[in-house]
Length: 165
Image (cartoon, one colour):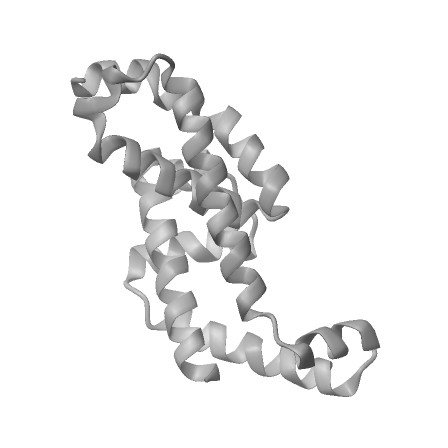
């Protein structure tokens, strides 16, 4: 499958796949990351996509599988202590302190990202701009904004895990 055909047949599925991922993962950022992974997988196997009877059905299956994987990983990361503190409620002083420390660590990590990724993650996750608005402000393509956002989130996640272990 050539790139033009991929754009015509696969890229329009984004909203549908995003909706499926969001319903499964219940978080917009995780859903966006999952759909980004789906597109990367489909892009890497684009030459063999013609063997599938229905590309939308295959893309939906890939999306569901990636979401299930993310849910399994999320389940392994939740400890018993986390669950107890979550049930204790938002007034728990330990949780308040932990949230404050987490915010400081995340801001520190974001400050060390490359300038474009730093700007994009701040606009999207802190100031809640839409991807299209960010592309217009930064003067980059929408796909480049999504890719930089995905890379920035991945880097923040990796660095945060290093700090908290």
